[in-house]
Length: 109
Image 1 (cartoon, rainbow, N blue to C red):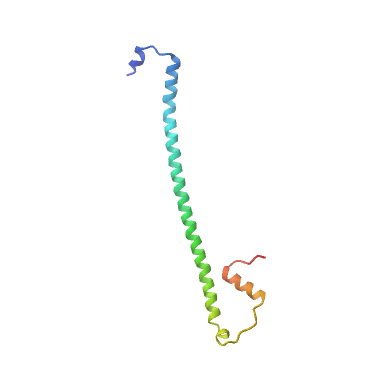
Image 2 (tube, rainbow, N blue to C red; image 1 turned 120 degrees about the vertical axis):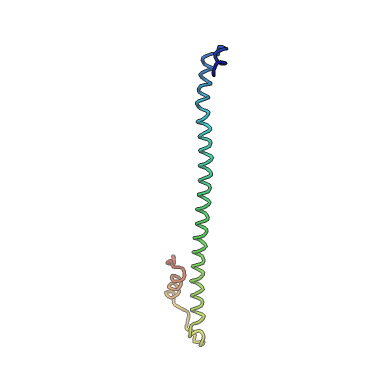
């Protein structure tokens, strides 16, 4: 099988280099395949994570909009406003309470 190597006398250094190269080649190819597959998997995972974050963000925004809409409807349908019996401007506490109810988080100064 390797008779062609025996017909001509090659230096030992040449044969050792060929042996090292033959041992390293599969390692380099295997590592390159691993890097490519790992890159593709990580890219797919990041794409799925970003898609999930976008869905959660849109649901959160929809929730805030629905709460604000409910607040506006409750103000629009209140008996005092419909009767024209308007009260003075609400106190800061009432405004902050309405903001807390609408957003679900405490306002910061």
